[in-house]
Length: 506
Image (cartoon, rainbow, N blue to C red; front, side):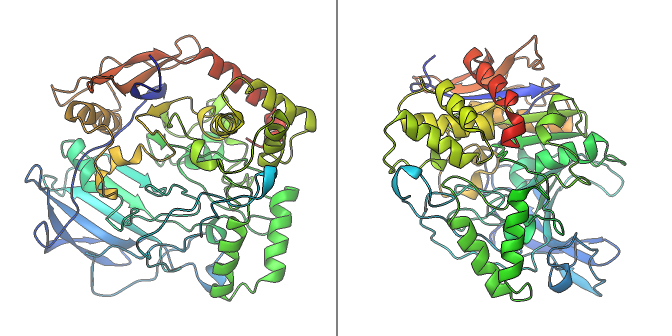
């Protein structure tokens, strides 16, 4: 099967595995209304609204903008979240919350063969997302058929950024690329047949969430929570974890020379109390970074994250029972500046040295060499980025064209963009989305509530059973779903990356 002619998704199951998507529209005046549904959280009482699913005609209750922590301002700006203050009366939870401060995009071009310049390719924005430090909110979606005494599984979604990609810099619980509601939990409720509660969380981004140094350490996303506390979080917070299009950048110790130098530079030149100055530094620092990298990312702080996540994964130190990792086959493409003059093997080596500055010169050359047969220099650079920061920590791949970083998200939350899924086939959509929700609700990918689900039997990926589930599209436009063997050349490259992990912080 040739990747250029067949759309496919490949997902790897660690112990068990999953993926997901669905179809929907977000509340309008016709689909959402106020009702008497209220919930008391001790510090506040929230009133939700009723959502009518235009596809099923079923109703759910949604609570938009539920505060889960005190605003991280003033002395709390770089501190761990604190409980919210008590608020009297009933709070209307019927509007999307403002986003946390976003980081700016990088420029389209990078100077010369050094490939330096910006963190991501520019993408034209058609909206301005309201952003503030008063942003630590949840959106909660509850099936309409649940009663007060009934307990349902909870799916907690930690957002990235629909279409623009970049969960450590961008995104929110509400907004997609075109201003449409980005992460509509009602989509997931539909795919679960009304058997799950969905929570979408907002968190601090960029310098506000991931500034690290001797006096400050950033947080993390799904993988960070999966490996937190050496896999021994007590009491357990969740049963299973899923990472979708996981971005795993170098994760240094909080007091490593690189994060420490950045911390000193920022704290000595920027008044911490001046939010406008901090916002400007946040944008400038990220856009001046090496193309395709993010400056502010999680670190190993020795408390929450006690070791490299890759080490925890290898040793099975995972919170919860099962962990599913899912990536796109062309993860590295948007992180490479295709307009830079990259024409020689020396350029590839130079690219590697810029991407991973703590690599030895001989190691950078070895990285370039092991990828030298994978197309032209730009294609090699894209594969290096994909292998190091996406594929090798997870193996699983999504390959519905164009299969760029984040392209799988539309299958989880199709209302997040102004377009239909690339492969808009209902059998495929059901198989993909229901696998995700079956994993969350029944903890079993092979337990189906929908008899029309065409996903075949799914087995765990192990060192002796290197089989991934393939969700794809044939040349004739039919679903192509089944198990495939993890490519041997990818496994060999991943073994190489593992051998130099001490120099990459990956």
